[in-house]
Image 1 (cartoon, one colour):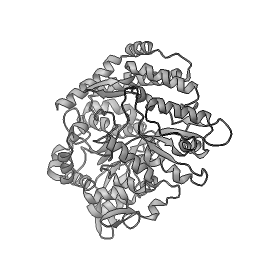
Image 2 (cartoon, one colour; image 1 turned 45 degrees about the horizontal axis):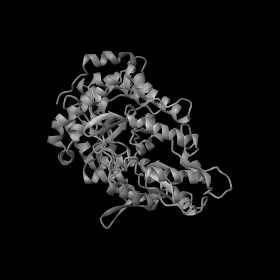
Image 3 (cartoon, one colour; image 1 turned 60 degrees about the vertical axis):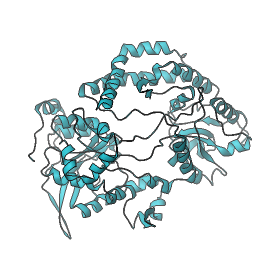
Length: 511
């Protein structure tokens, strides 16, 4: 397969970014690295995600293990000093020297794929990647969720596993002390929070309890009144929650709860709320990811004796429905790895990526190194003490230090999470899954370049204004006025913004 040059519009549009970039890394595919059992081909990879949280590390043990299995080793090219992933990606593109493999967001990989920077992978996968192709056939909707607007797939995606993203949590030990039952409705939830505020469940003789807390996630409570924070699906139609009548009711009630001190007065600014409020025996209820949150029961058992922070079902809302607005995506996280159009042997590269979709490669990326981070017992991987007893207690970060659980091209195995979760979290996740409390999710949609511009320009304005307005409403500095809010976002171009989503969703359905 011949190399393809970047199209002129791409280079022209990025030329200014390229100027002054004298330390761009060489991206030749021909370099080799020696190993004691022979030569291993070295490929260049760009991976700079989450503003520097994920930068490819040449020393990651999982990728060294993959090199032993595939004959390909990777060398990272992303600047380790940069803390701006978008800027780092743009500078790499502007240089015109595209590494063999490029990790990035779907919208950018699609955009530059269409312009000629990355190869379409459809035929390469069919002909040379049996494990990926097997997943494509098994997962209906996979291609629709990840392909570009031209119908080509430009990346091998990173796929999360499991369903649950967040759950409600409640201090069962506080309920027991006050002889209260787990709340089942929004009114009962309100009464419990009020009791937490007024009846001293932490027993220190002060009214210092924070009945409900989170980290700038107060709108997760909106579904208690049938309202959603952003875009959602209802009867096959995309809607914007803050534009619907229920949002007025939700904001009025949350403002009331905030005024009565039932909601953390620092909810819009407090960081590490769980550490501080649970660690000081002040927090009563919240919504968070269950895997990490239930772990505080173990971490705080000595400093907060008897703490029992358990998952609770979403209270029935004013319409009698239990709704959890969050859910993990079925098709990926809009992240993946593309193959450069300048790559010399794309067939070999897609085979390399295919390894990570094999059972062996998937296990490597989920569990790390056999004999070090996990062992096989009764045919299944089990984490070793070395993995479980990380010095900071965070097994996920420990695994990432090996290169496992980084958002490369592979699909997660939810069993890896269950192996380290507190039983409270496992039970809660099973309850949410069995109860199917999840709101219908909008699938991963694909947008044209023009549509992306609308979402960036208009969408950013709307989101900023919404966040600022909601904070004023809830804190009581302005009365809740949904009609005025709607008029203002209409002036910003809301109808054009929502049309982009509706058009993209129709294309998704029709494809």
